[in-house]
Amino acid sequence: MKNAISDLLSLLYPDLCLICGENLLKNEHQICLSCLNEIPRTGYHLQKDNPVEKRFWGKVPVFRATAFFYFQKGSQFQKLLHELKYRDNKEIGEIMGRYAAAELLESVDFNTVDVIIPIPLHPKKYAKRGYNQSEWIGKGLSTVFNKPQDINSMKRVIENTTQTKKSVFERYENTEGIFELTDSKNLENKHILLVDDVLTTGSTIEAAINTLLRVTNVKISIFTLATA
Picture 1 (cartoon, helix red, strand yellow):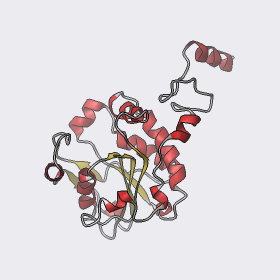
Picture 2: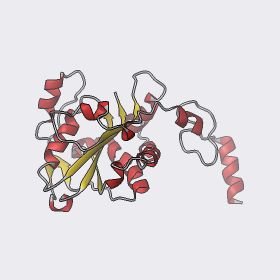
Picture 3: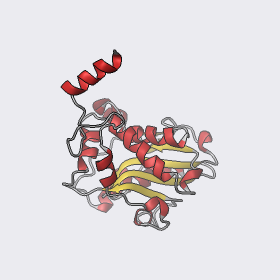
Picture 4: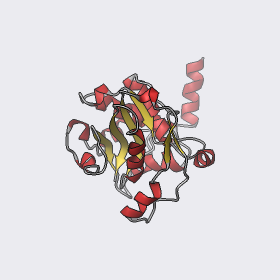
């Protein structure tokens, strides 16, 4: 009876793929397998000294860094990020986090991650949006990695202005001192996977890494859902 009702609701209100708009099959969630296969993956998790890692050379020490796919303004896959950040669709973050994690596990280096830390939002921004998109990506990663997500050991203490249209140096100034550790003991001797949604200049991630480097014997890797 329950399956019959579910099938009827699917006919009346079909679930459609966010990318192509086609009906989703029963085991598909928000994005069909065909579109999932078409996502322009970077494959950087299998490539040391990749372009994402090179962005941080000479700035902060990073063990490994990767992004799941390439972001290009105007592309059909931009919808995934817009849904996540601006259309209250936090679930797509968890879904994409799961898909990305399954591929990250192919890497020996990312397999050694102990804890996942999403880039924190300032409380005012969190209250306005209602959720942290990076935290939802982290949920998907955490489930597949079977490693805890820590949303309490680092917090955002300064609500910096938007990064849009700022120069690289202005972005650096805009993010200086915006994070603070609340529990460093909990992170000692750990391999941290720092998670964000999109990598542009990397200034926010750099600020987070500089904060985490105050922890004893910490190793930091980076994952973003997309890279510009």
